[in-house]
Length: 204
Image (tube, rainbow, N blue to C red; front, top):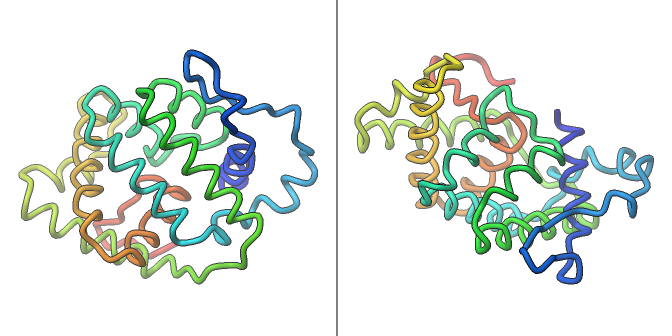
């Protein structure tokens, strides 16, 4: 899954104003890629992406999560078992409004470019999970039903809607964290999806 995500981020770097159609479809031209080169370097894109670029991606998620018409599609992308490859990101972005599509296209481009050009960034998965757990505690105090939604494991519509509500609440809490904490949490969510581990499961 991480390889699929890295490939999507690398491909996003090819999004440019000249490729945007009159209908504002931010499509990625796969024919311009050397697949071997992408797979050789793509696995480190998230680790190398700069903190500002990851935070810009978080801000894009935050803004879309506040739009009821967009939140459902966005939440589906962060389901624990969801595919987060290029095609999945493309399908999701295409369902968003013009402003959100532009935000995501710009954010993924910055992540890809800084990830391909930068040095590996420090990342502690256990610390990232701790940030998410702390955000969950705050969200539990602020929002009734938050933990019920966060720990829902069903695949039925009600369970997915409950997880989505909790995801939106968590993102709203994370916006008030210092940038380093937001970035750690965002890297985790992009890699693992909504696997909060509220029950004390050991970090992966």
